[in-house]
Length: 122
Image (cartoon, rainbow, N blue to C red; front, side, top):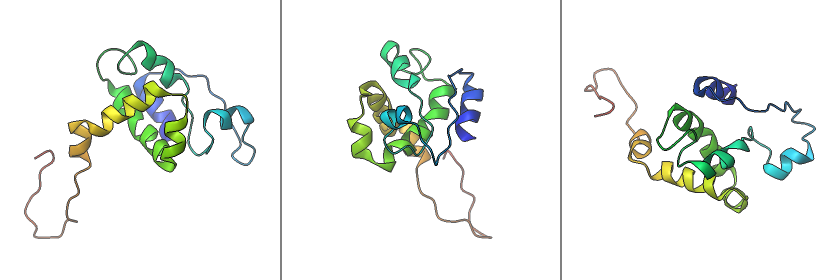
């Protein structure tokens, strides 16, 4: 559902291949050996032409899809970085080092009644 929502908001059309998780096709496992999240094979092709998914500047597509790619990569980093997607790997590394991502990942104390107001971004 999250991947489909991201695609809808990014206005990206992809070839859909619905699968049954108990019966993962060999083609899917060849692209994503863990087979844990949706596979977006088109990401590498887009990044071969551009610095970002839809061109030379970041769009809502990059912002919306990055968390899914990050989640996929963190399931098994060694596997992710061994896949034949060097452009996608560089794209993800760029976002992981981006000031917006670092700011978004700032940890805050849990709110309690009476705490001072915390603004984000500060």
